[in-house]
Structure formats: C-alpha cells, structure tokens
Image 1: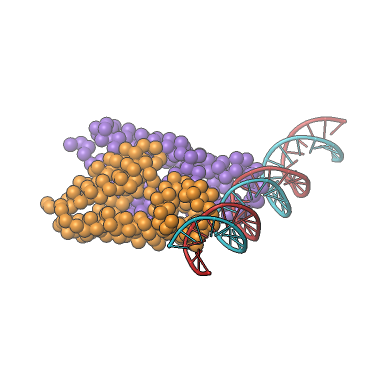
Image 2 (image 1 turned 180 degrees about the horizontal axis):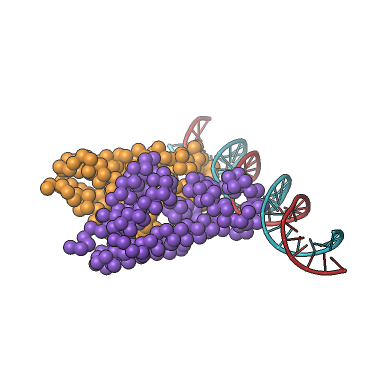
Length: 184
Length: 184
DNA sequence: CTAACTGTACCGAACGTTTGGTATAATGTC
DNA sequence: GACATTATACCAAACGTTCGGTACAGTTAG
C-alpha cells in the first residue's frame, strides 16, 4: 500500500497521544505495519511521518480553506464556511490541533518553521478577504490573527474542560466578530 | 535544600522542552542535583515534579489573580491588572503556558483533572467579577471563557509565529473587550 | 564532653525497559 | 526472474527509576 494510506491513522495517533506519546510500537500496532514496513515507507522515521501528515494537512488547508476564502460570495458566509469545515476536522472541538501539539512537544524545533508558514498563510488569506471587503488594512491584519487565536484558544479550552462547547461557540461567533467594523 | 527551591528551574525546563522533552538528565543538569537526589525530594518521580510545579502555579494564580479579581476597584482596571501580571509570567508572550503543554503532551491523562479545575476556577473568578459589575449571567460566562481563549490562543500563536506581539495585543485589548456590553 | 545514634541531603553506578532504528531473509506480485 | 513489500530478529542509546552508600548536622545517652 502507498504510504498515503496511513496518513489518517498517523494523524489520529499524533493527535491522540502527542508527538512523544505516539511511539513506534503504537504506530505499528495501529497501522498494522511492522517496524520494517514503516521504515520502508518512511525512511526518515517518525519525523518523516509527521512531515507527511503535515504535507497532507497543508494541502487540505489550501484546497478546503485558503482557496475557498479566496473565492466568491460575501465575506461573512465564506468565513462561516471556513468555520463549518474546521468543525468537521476538529470533530466539533473534541480533537486537538496537531500544530499546537507539535509547537509544545519535545520536537518543537524540528517543526516550528512549517507551523509558522502554515499560520502565516492562513492569516494572510483571511486578511486578504477582509481587505477585499473594505476593511482597513491594519485592522484586517489584527482580525486575521484574532481568528487563529480564537481557533487555537478555544481548542485548548475545550481540551482542558473536556467540553467541546467553547470551540463550537467560537466557531459560531467567529464570522460576525471578524467582520465587525466593515461597511460603516 | 528544600524541594521548593527547584520549582523555578523545573518550571523553566518543562516550559522550554515540554513534558517529554524535559528529561531527567536535563533536569539533573539544570538543577545541579544528581538523579538519585531528585528522587529524594520527589519520590514520585517526574510526575511529582510536575505536580509540585502545578501546586506552585495554582497558589500563584490564587494569590495574584483570583484574589485580586475578587477585590475592589472598577472591573476594567482589575482585568487590566490581570493582564499586566500575566504579561509578566509569560514574559510578554515569549514563554508558553505549562497547562497547554501538559494538555497536549503524552501524559495528558495524568494532569488533565488539575488543569480542568484550574481553568474552571479562573473562569469563575472572571465571571463573578463581570456579573458583579452588572453583566448578564449567561454573557458573563461566555466572556469568562473568551478570556481564557484569548490568553491560550494568543500564546499559541505567538509561539507559532515566534513573535510575541499577538499575545501583547491580546493582553492590551482583553479588558475592554470583556467589559463590552456592560452598563448600557 | 563524648560516643552512639538518627535523619536529611546527596551521589555514582547500575537497573530493567523502551525507545527509534537496522540488518537480513522470506514472501508476495508483476 | 525481478522488484516491491514485509516479518523476524536484533541493536545501541536513552529513558525513568532504584540501589548501596557517603557526608554531615542534630539529637540523645551515659
């Protein structure tokens, strides 16, 4: 089987146990692949597995969020669609975000640059959308950051409280709160 | 030396390297104590070290944030003071939050309950303050959660972008944005 | 005053286990 | 036959943890 087959399992493992908690034994068990097979598909080892998952997430974000934000329709409903799709990926707030896991795990140095680029692109797409719809450039930049803050923060809080509702409410309120102040 | 002496070093280590990345070798090196000596002070091992740090953080939060929020003065300036003190602890956004690290690390199960209580108490204190200053109860609850979301989210983003300014701006805007809608 | 004892602090060295990783030989597939 | 894939067996290194024991400050007893 092609290595792409195992991306869902890998993503699930890293989200459930963290970068350090997802040991090769667990990965081997979950994927049904022996260690040798894992190293056949991922010669770079665990790090390459994460990188492959990041490749997948990056292209997912591009196809399903960034391009959509750059599309047509009124800004608020495009942002609403972003939130809907995010609710899907994070299973309504029950799943943590891999980027945060990597950022706070023991291998943060290895993945920091990739997460940084990912965040930047995401923010940029939102900023572009807000500017396009008449918002002041500086304010748009702040609102773009606010979006990421709301997403990451509500995910953390939902994890901490073991209650998905903070994330769900955040996704509900995000579109309108980002657009506030436009078309005066 | 009493084990409390090593709390600052431990906190620093766990924040810098994460729960899994802060190995006993590093802890031994940083504290200047041999591994065996560490087990003299912390018979419960690494987990007890974290618990001790959590004890410290919990009492810090209580003394410096929760009690202050429950004090006197107008709400906005009390929230402002909270943000000022948080800026100190997180070194203006350069330092990550231990609770998030534990929540996303490999030992999340071990520390989840403590983080949950900590978050709850913190939110409650903010909610009480907002209600006390005339805010609707339901809205106050949401704003309490929003506060934690802004703190944790902006810390994550600052980590990810390697730029403390998102956190700093969040701390600057938090007091007024929480009070919005009161005294109509 | 002294000698025996006790408790705290500390440490070098090793423990058993698990980690990520690698040979190599066998198996499946075209 | 050739090549991709896999299972078995193995490895060095690192992990958290424990052992046996030293140093030394108090405390107690004669």
